[in-house]
Every structure is written in structure tokens, then in C-alpha cells.
Image 1 (tube, helix red, strand yellow):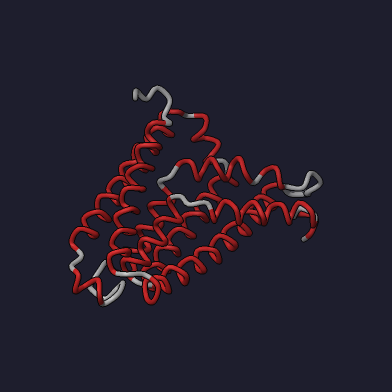
Image 2: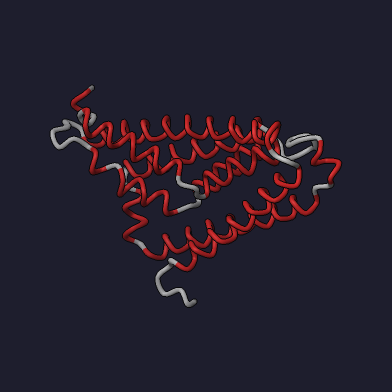
Length: 221
């Protein structure tokens, strides 16, 4: 299988790049931490599972050309941008509302003490947040090809293997992130700090939605 994957030096560079990308705060990072702080480790794991499933969709789409079609058709890409930005903004508002409704008594019981969205809903949130982000689709299209070995007998298979590597490594990182966030919520953070973090996550999502729209060609500031 080694002929379909990069050599040791390139493989190390790929793994390092994936780690840096995962550790850079963004939509997936913020959602995973936010859902863990709000609903506990199970909620965070469900949201992370949705994000991983979304990455699988993007990797398959990029491997079989959908991302390239989006890049070639501005109208379809713009529609996906509007949908993704709208969903991010909606999530941000929901997080701000959730933070404002938290009472001191509820906060004192710790994250996840009160009723919240079902695990299926958490998974769906993670999936939609990732799938509706067109920048993730174009990222897969731009990031993976340079690591496909020039002598690979099947470039599509190499692309899929690199995509699977990215998904597995990213999933392990999100798992670690959930465990750290859950521990922070349980023993290391005051109720007021947890409320502030959830509100900050809401503001971040709204800011990311605006950033996504501002990057559209022809958008008027």
C-alpha cells in the first residue's frame, strides 16, 4: 500500500500539517468545545462525530470531483456560502440565548446537568456545520493533492487514503478536545467562566458567518 501513500518525510509533513490545522481554532474547534461545555462529554462526542462524518462527505466529494464543480460554478458555490453562513449565524444566536438563560443554580451543577438537545440533534448540528461550509470542500481539493505520490498507480485511491488519514487523525484530535473540555467544565472552571465561554462561542460563530459572506466575490462591505 505504500506506493499509494507518500514516503516517510512527506507523511510526517502531512501529519504535522493536519495537526496544526486541527489545533487552529475555527468552526469545528469552537463547536466541539462549545457543545461539550454546554451539554457534557456525550454531547461533545456526538457533535464531534457529526463533524467527522461531514469531513468524510467532503473527502469523498473532493475525490470524485464535486468540489471542483463548485469551484467552477460560482452560483452554486455562492448558494452554499449563504446556506453555511446562515446556519453558523443561527448557531451563534442559539449559543448566546443558551448562555443568557443559564441560572446560577443550573451552572453550579456543572455542564450537561440540565436537559438539552438529543445526541442525534448534536450529531446533526456537527454534520450540517461541516457539510455546509464550502471552504472545507475547497480545502480538501487544495490540501490533499500535493501529498499524492507522483508514481501512484491510482491517484483517486491515493486521494481517498489521504482523506481517510485526515478524517481519522482529525477525529482523534476532536476526541482529545472533548475530554479536555469536559474536564475543564467538571473541575477547572467556575460557572461564570463556562457561561462566558459559551457566549464567546456564540459571538465567534456569528463573526465566522459574517467573514464567510464578506469573502464572497462582489460582496459590499
